Image (cartoon, rainbow, N blue to C red; front, side, top):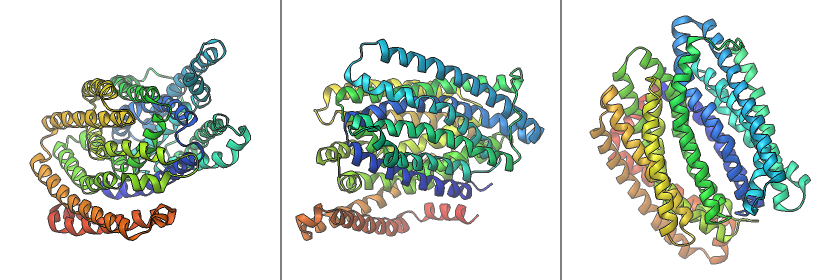
Length: 520
């Protein structure tokens, strides 16, 4: 299987989803800005995402896909469908129990607890959106089944539905909940729950068409179930710690200021657009690819796949990170500013983006290496390393909040995330080298330097262009949306052209490697 061919399929749909996700954030910025309503929503929405990572596309998929692929390879489709059915029923039972208990606790807190203003804004939204985790976790399991049989299109397209429903909710549901922002935000929460149900429904025809509809069963005595749970346990702990840390980041941001979680979320969306287009798409394909290579003990192929994937991603992520840094404020102003999102919101979001943007490189490293460990049925090592990274992140969070000046503390949270993720990725790289052999780190390091040099040429071209345009355009035109579009668009076009020329000169071998995979 050519991973880059399938990655392109995933990338197209993921890209469309990310673009719609960016559009929904533009609308959220227009209607809610960096207000308490938006920040409370962002904090509340992180909780169902915690369970999505634990029981959905994260820990369970990491444990399920290698065993499912192995069963499919060695025992045939019928055995694989029986395994999938047992896992699905077990997952649904656990999730329903957690959802019922959590909703009851939240209701008791709302009705009888003494809540502060910020907590009182978060909990009602959390109660509405928490059942979303049932649907999205089951969706993630279905997507894992389809990916294992090389059906990548629908799983990659599924998140599009969330964004479509989210956008529709902003126009049609929110106005029905009142005029205040604190009231209208409930329309978005109910829209997300509806989207989860629809995302689950559309998986059914695809599973039937692929011949992989699970044989539902409550028989959990299967040895393969126990094997999945053993693999899932460490992964759940590791991802749970990561996601819990993500929630703590949101709470700390809310402590910094009612605007901080919203500003961080807008900056994250801009970073996750290229990350989702390329790194997440490639990571989706890598897990089943690594799983097949591991099942055949083709460790040399795993190392080569890591090298090719890293080299291809660096060609994209290094200039993307550099571009987001040098154009942070013009991009944020053009995309988000308007309505409730004012100049102060632009400034605060840009500051977060300066420090999030380098994460494109280190987040990509993590997304490539972790699937290799999971394919080797080693879910413990990423957990051990992840725990240290989370502790480092939390320590840096507190340190930066205490030492960074007011108005920059939320940017310190972004910086801490990038630093701790970088340390995590480096540790995983050292360990995977001992397991499967070196992917050629010396050669990859030289590629990194050459791509960074080409990116520097791009940055200089953008800086010169931006300076010339700011002198030539009148203040009135530069402040209009058309003026902002002109400045950003011309800078991106000239910067992209400069990078393409510089990469052709400095990075011929890297470009040839990527082009060979595209043609194969």
